[in-house]
Length: 127
Image 1: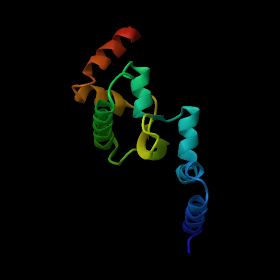
Image 2: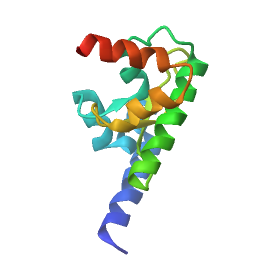
Image 3: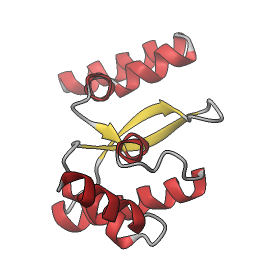
């Protein structure tokens, strides 16, 4: 058995015996650490930065789908995923994470009509 497969198997076994929060953090590993330090951000964090924190969950979810589609078109693979708590329900969900300056986030703002108004305000503030 390959060493990484053995480590992965042991990590998942340890995660099953730990509390839910610790288990999900264990499975997410270093990606969760990069999100905590700000080197990677979730789409909801990006929307908070550009003034879209008041958008309902449905619109934020659709923005995430558009950002993922733009990321796949640019890179040919899916973005990294991490386990995180949903901000309103508290359930553990998979979310995609991106670099804070990833072009896919801005392409998602442009392609989804529910967030286009945020793109105009983002460029106005930068000027």
